[in-house]
Image (cartoon, rainbow, N blue to C red; front, side):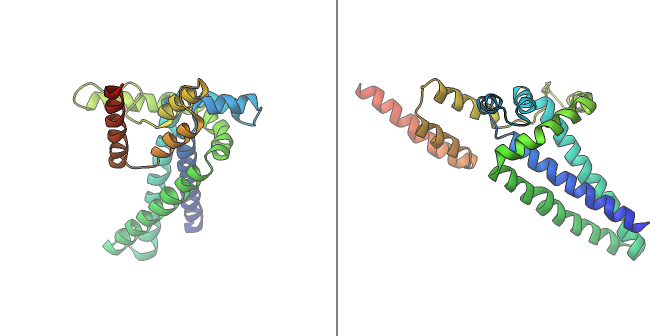
Length: 218
């Protein structure tokens, strides 16, 4: 009996890691890049294009499924430790420590790193699966968002508060496509997304100052 529960917990943790990797990869693909994949007839490109055209609808579901996998795996792990050690504090403490480490490393660090390093292949591979899951469970995240907005003071967000950098990347790609910026400038701006918010402000403020001083000299 415990072996079956253990396999279930392992399966859920792996599934949560795959969802985290897919979530990270999908947020790094812009509409322009997805259109290029469609023109190249890449497998999964059509589904990927549909996802990047309406990110909140799909990414909200990925987030919900990932959290569900982590929480259910945590419950199963706790029950396993209670079965092994008895209903005492040591079982709960060990279950908490194990799941914190597992969630951080296996569901957090490892899959997200792979999702960032191999964004395009991971996004293309996961797009059909995410698209299919959304067709099945699509309304569920929307209902939960409505519930969250009802419980949150002030005006909520219809598509949820979960945002991604894909929209900004899309604007940069469009600017390069329309020759507003050069390709090397596009790469430089994309590299800014790798920095933290503080560093972004430090990079952008001197740029604004330089533009203002240049305009003044002109």
